Amino acid sequence: MKQTNYLTFTVSLLTFFLVNFSAAAQSKQSASLHFNDDISLLKEINAEKNETKSIFATSTDDNEEKEKEEEFKPSFSVGAIIHMFAGSQQNGYAFGGDPAGPEADKWKSDFTVYRARIMVGAQLTKKGNFFMETEIPMPINGASTASGGKQIAVTPIILDCQYEHVFNDYFSVIGGLQLVSHNRNGLQGAAGLMANDFTYYQYPYNLFPDSPLQGNFGRDLGVNFRGFLANNKLEYRLGFFSGRTNFEGTTSSPIRTVGRLVYNVLDEDKSFYYSGTNLGKGKTLSIGGGVDTQGDYLAAGIDVFMDMPLGNAGSITLNSAYSYISGGNNPENEYSFATMIPTQNTQFMELGYYFKDLKLQPWLRYERQGMNAESNQIGNGESISDFNKYNSTTVFGGGVNYWFNGYNTNLRLSYTTTTKTVAATDESKTYGQVWLQAQIFVF
Image (cartoon, rainbow, N blue to C red; front, side, top):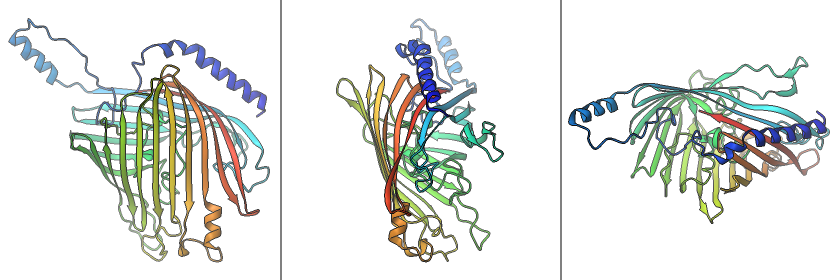
């Protein structure tokens, strides 16, 4: 697509949102998502009205009012989240491109519907709720299909489908197809991201059905136990999932086990889907750690999230994580991941500042996948040092978000680079990507 068309679209998109939502930027965001209100999966589906009781009410009135309060009525909610952008990316960008390919420096522009989810939620009983959402399995854009057409006909899939029963603050059970990760970033909700997208390496082997863990955009089938202890400061999650079900030489497969502990030093954080930024609401300092394992596969890591006021202008957000990941070093083991997941460490950090009056949030992002492969994890004839050098990647970027209508509608402008050493030339190459992204969210 020509660069002039890209620039025209960018200006049009900015004008559309600034004109149509300028009023919303000045009004109270009553419909915006609240991340710290409830232990349940659903937020604001069955909100109670704040009614003032008359001081002249009789005992009969009291009894009738209590009966009404005890009477439960199931509620139902439908919503959507859409991410669409005008973007330009170099052919050598490591994700969706090839740093060693021809014309790696050349830029290619397009318009994309990147994420389009329909969400359905229901509060079935006082303690039980249900959540389901769909997703498009691939972006809708001008990319060529195998038949030579444009990639605009996409069949939605079921992304999440889960039931939660909350017995009390200490114990709840979530069963079904759900988001699985040992760290915070892998459990964030799409509507509350601070950067333009999820990180690349926080759950790199759980993204697709043909990935080593045979997940689906980070989801897996199973049951998850969750609760809060120590005055709701300490959160635990312990889940058992199907994981990989196809191992060479056997028809059986072990259960995938994922556990996580988080201590919230300041405010409570009971959100099932964590936020990437709180937009100046509250004071959050969460310190967490987790483990994800199946057979010889192991991922273990720690993470820190901080979001709190800093100065009179606004608030600071810091999100960081470190993980060790390995598939084991013995390909002969019954449930080996040795040839699928080389030993590595991943590092991640996001840093942003939210200007509350301007509703602007500049941010920076760093991520690194550093390979540290072992002898039996790579092919014969390939040196470990070369494998590690050519398969390690660094991501760095930044941008600015305009939260003119909070999480419900906003704009994000970002520039991200990937750096990787190309084997053919033994040179480190850096290539870029630019997005102007609009978010539409309601639930």
